[in-house]
Image (tube, rainbow, N blue to C red; front, side, top):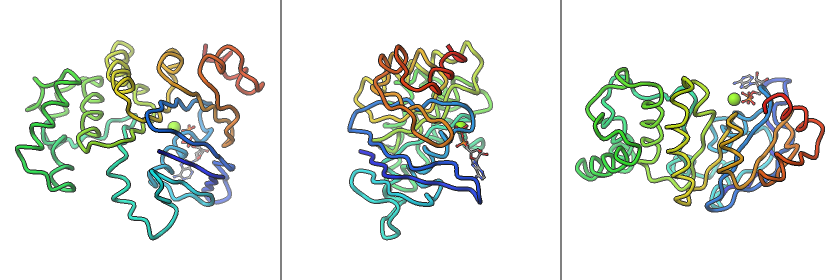
Length: 240
Ligand code: ADP
Ligand code: MG
């Protein structure tokens, strides 16, 4: 689904990603962890070209997105993204948030878009909020709407950048539960997270980034029980 080869990204003289190579297979759930500033967000943002890689290659379902000939808008339709701070459209109802992109980009009919949207809101437990505005929702509800909105485009890949970091503690679980259900449905997912329990339970693999280097790439049991590098050992000692 995703293949990354020798990915480099610099901002000016600051080299933030220093040659990352990995791949994420169909249906795999990958947790990306590491210290603040290690390049996790930049890595995720390169995958759907919200950042332009400085060097290296990235393929999404075989399409080389670093090739200028590739239609990135088309590729992006297949890659949903969920951010720490939700980014819902504040002037639209929950339902309109979900139907906006399908109507605009996919030329879906209104009734079809609304049916899909209501199904998704049902799945994240928020059908009753369809006509509310985002400002009326709690953080956990907003994030569940943001996930449903990304799913409304029917993507095959979902990227999450610290989806629970901005939430009050009591709202973290309701969002992780939605993500867990999605993971079990076979969605291909890359999740930047500080929720180590979730990573351990749900991820198929953990990618540990430090200083722009992919230091470890291992199944969660192996990573959490026997981290190989001293950098991962130090990190885990601080967070666990
Ligand atoms: P993480 O998500 O692991 O905390 P980031 O990918 O956000 O790390 O950032 C890694 C480094 O890249 C940081 O030093 C940050 O300041 C820098 N950086 C990120 N985005 C930009 C940008 N748009 N312009 C300049 N520097 C950036
Ligand atoms: Mg980040």
